Image (cartoon, rainbow, N blue to C red; front, side, top):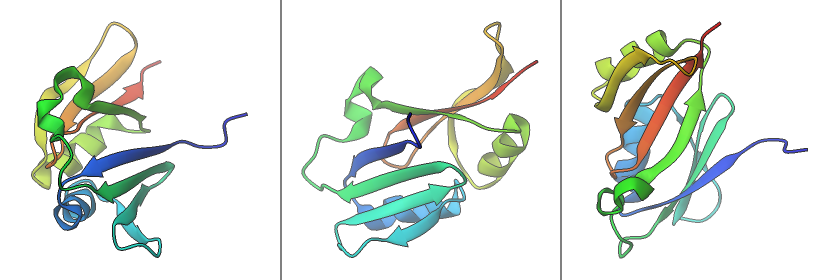
Amino acid sequence: MIQRTMYVLAVQDLQKSLEYYRDVLGFAIREIGDDGWRIFERDGCRIMAGHCPDSTPAHDLGDHSYFAYLVVDNADEFYKEVVANGAELIKEIKSEPWGMREFGLRTNDGHRIMIGQEQK
């Protein structure tokens, strides 16, 4: 049984990333006892971010810059929140034929996230 998921990301500037996840996406930031790592938490989602200034920037990874699809209770509310906070959208909110109401965004590091709500 999988109890939860945690994403692990390399970021080039940990301080800028934690500010983005906190201020734009509404995540809480948790120290873990290592200056090179932080955990970003919101509801059931945890992202462990590591300071890797020499890593390939996510925006240079093309299709591989996608790292998460977050299923939420209310995609429209989440959409309004992150847009008001300045999120860069890569897909406007839309109801899709596969039963999801979804949108996409790109983080300040260039990682891409899809956010969706199951439609009944």
